[in-house]
Length: 346
Image (cartoon, rainbow, N blue to C red; front, side, top):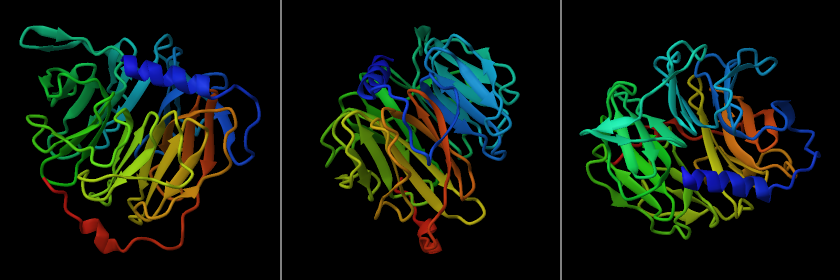
């Protein structure tokens, strides 16, 4: 995916390599490697999956003390885990997709997408999302639209936006039918409520149409977050109809990454925003306020975020120079639980 390669190269150029880092962030491993994707096992927080630029996939089953190495010559742009069956893992690589059905012990490459006799290579896949409603569909973005599979990659169907390069995907799984949001290289954000049969452009308030990060809030389903490559980070509180720039110090000119944890025991939520300037911010009140997390990682670009699935969470930062971790604390105040009943507009 050309756009993703440009983003990675630009981020590494932007972050001048120095060896100073904040005492609040702890280097967990993979020093000297560019970390492009991080996922934490949904029920076993000790298991961490890390994708790197050009040196494959690393899996730790002991909170990062030791690492197993897989797919050693690949760039791993995206990792998704089936939350209902965490042994199923899909990774998007420079040269295609691979699947594991045994928790990452072994991976098998998937054939290129084929539909109506035509092959659609998905080399360089950097954006994927899984629908957690009953369909359990996986949606993949390529340079030439989106494709969906309902059988974990055995068969594929087109999901629209064939004239666009897809850079980010997020799915609202709250209603009976999923709502898909897609970010593009140069054409902003699109929304579909019918699995890609039709799409609507939703860019009112977005200044930079190069959208490299999207997140649909899993608790407050009216809220979306977006990060652009050079024009700021944005929040929408009306399902994407209107956007406002997040005006605190989160003004990276080189891109963003997004992550969220919703504690299944307490129902509390934290959304994290990292930027390629080495900074991380968080909101615990639906985007009303943002606070900085730790000190700036000087000379390091935050390329991806991952976090454990309970609060207080362990926050993982994938940078252009290794993987970092920090244990998070949460605020005493929380959103009223009635807000969790907000319904998605289908």
